[in-house]
Length: 149
Image (tube, rainbow, N blue to C red):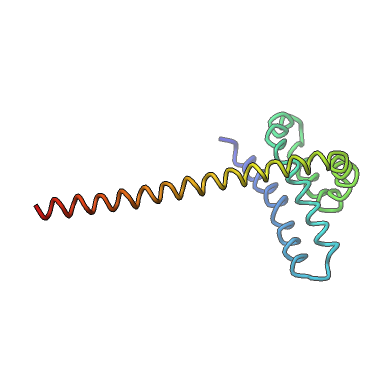
């Protein structure tokens, strides 16, 4: 198990990454006129989600550096203070625009596949339900025959 100070640091980072942004997002959602605030919140969550798949590996590799936890905490605060917008404008948006048509195509393909699987599951469910009803009727007949004999 990691030392208690490490666990406290991890909790502090989790709270920094989520608690204030959740509050800010709720405030932006409840303030109908705050379109810019909502946009900032969406960009922050986008940046956080984009980094999530890499975070575990980065933590294992970079944790040996002195003050890594402080640097990570500072990066989270920076993201909340316009850093996410800068990251979005410099990196994520251009990457998205460059690959938008390919991503749209992939998304449409995934949606079509999910719809196909959903329909297969529906059909299988109907067959299982019908088989269950048939078996239930047969069991009732067998029980009735055995009790009447």
